[in-house]
Image 1 (cartoon, one colour):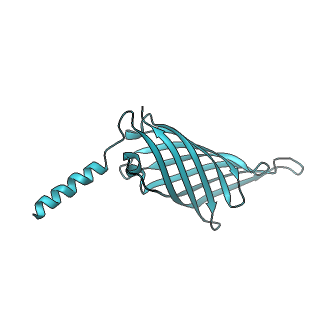
Image 2 (cartoon, helix red, strand yellow; image 1 turned 30 degrees about the vertical axis):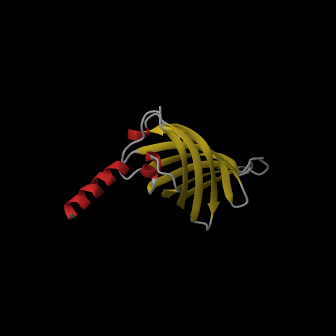
Length: 163
């Protein structure tokens, strides 16, 4: 009996790790916790309308919020890195997002953001990746909230499709 239960658990675990299939599509909803790891500010000379340029990096984990697709399972608890640049004058910019699964596969995305009173929000575009993420396309939105000078969270949602 114990052997049968173990075999079922192994089979179910293998099923959870299956990659996305050609033509598969869905909606990913995630919640991430990020820590600020780097921040740079380059101030412009007095009178310049752009005030300063910023850059930074954040690192943490993303968790999927529901759903049962292969993409949801692959990205649950994935390592999440965000490198970003911004303009203090317009309080806007763009970022590069990298999600790395437990197996080492990477999903790449770009974001375009505008500042809000609590952080930023904007559009996220999937750019492809490695392994099961090769050729993935998608687009969605995110809301980033600064909790403390170090701790942040990111709610993200996108529609995706495999070629």
